[in-house]
Length: 113
Length: 112
Image: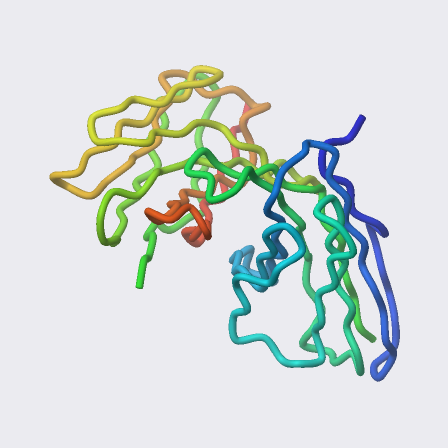
């Protein structure tokens, strides 16, 4: 069983489209995250949810909207996709306010053409 | 804010060579420190961690010691293998544990 699973693994879409990436964790963790990895491999946090409540919202365009229907799921919806949104998006989870690290999904490679 | 600085890559070594990847950090209080590894086409895996000063994290032959006096957490391995080729990320978690801040990543290539 995959601990943190993301779908799809690859996503190719045209500019202006709306798309969603799904994430599910079966670890019983309270907190989930979305990170963006750019072409230079740099990782930056986008959002963090704790028990369905948004606790971190970095400087991300409001075209990006996370949704957490329950504490095991954190989906990322992106409206009006732009070329610059092309990146790898990672979902992660951890116990609440964990100082012991996160468990990451395998990533979703988004390519906007 | 918190920040992590890693040595610039890429790093290319021959098999069985000694590896050091430098990592320094800036943070208030007492962060936890981590090394993550990303193999080609995969997600990030936790390699090792240390949660307080002078702790040594170790796993799969890799080691790193939390040095508060030098604000460093350098990654070392005595004898690298081709299978160690990957991108290595140093990271810290703040006091609240609410976010993980990453360094820029260091690409390691080990040649046979």
